[in-house]
Image (cartoon, rainbow, N blue to C red):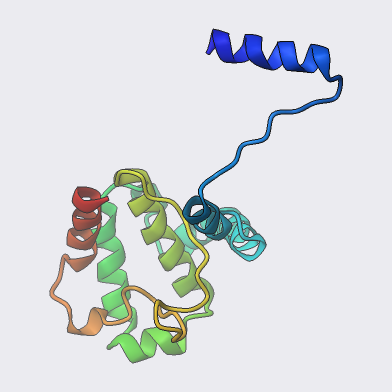
Length: 155
């Protein structure tokens, strides 16, 4: 690191105003575009700001600690509110569902290796992206937690 700083200082001395530029491989540039997309950043900011209210609304705010065990509580609440994935999709823009999606994503991000938020408005084959747990009605209990653990092992 010291050699790098010295090299940068030397170039700046020769060329006042020069700043180093990081050149990323094309695939890294494409990946990064999804991590700092303005729409994603605005959504994340809104979710962070809304989280205390969301946690209070769904009860037991002290349980929302971003740990894997808290997903069991969220899964119970989702199963109580919705009969199936279609009902969840019908409410996908509601504060509850948006907050739940953000919370699950934050648990994944905080508990799995090398996971970050991405903005991908379309699926891999051009279809509209869905909600990752929209099929919760057909899943066994504990599926949120198992899914996060699977990401952690593979992440």
